[in-house]
Image (cartoon, rainbow, N blue to C red; front, side, top):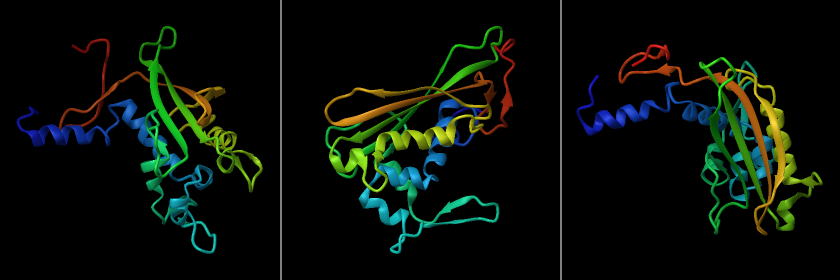
Length: 214
C-alpha cells in the first residue's frame, strides 16, 4: 500500500512497536516488560518518590498474581521508566528524581560461520549507582547496590529464552566513569534470525528469502 498522507506515515511508524520486523524495537520492548515486572530490581533502584507505587502502606507488594502465577503490577511501576530505567545510555548532569539508573542497549554484529540467516544479538546493561553512602550500599542488605542489581539481571536473563533463543552472559565488568557513579556493565548474547521478517504496510508479516529478494 502506498503512503499518501501524514497519517499514513504515522500509522506505519506506530506499527513498528507492535510487529516483529525491527529487532531493536522488539527486543527493547521485551526487556522493558521484563524489568518493570521485577519488584526486587525496582526496589534496588531506590527511587523514594515511586516507592508508594511499589509497596502499600503496610509494606505489602502493590501487585497481585493471576491464576497462572504471573505477577500483575497494581501500582504504576512503568513510571520507573521515566526516571531510572532507560533504553539508551545517557545520564544528565542534574537529576531531579533519581540517583540510580539502569540503561540498556541492543546491537547486532557478525553472523555464525556459514549461516547468513542468523546473527548475534547483544544486550548491554549499564548500571549507574550514586556514590553517596545511602545509595552505594543498601543498608538493609549490606551489599553493593550496583552488584545486587547486576545479580538480579543475571538471574533474569542468563540462559533465558526471552528473545526466542538461549541468552548467555558473556561479560560482567565493573566500569570506571567519573566521581559521580559506581558502574557495572553486563553483556548478554543470543543467536537470532538475521532481519528476516517483513510486514508490508497494512499487510501480513512474512519471512524474507534473503537470497532472492530484490
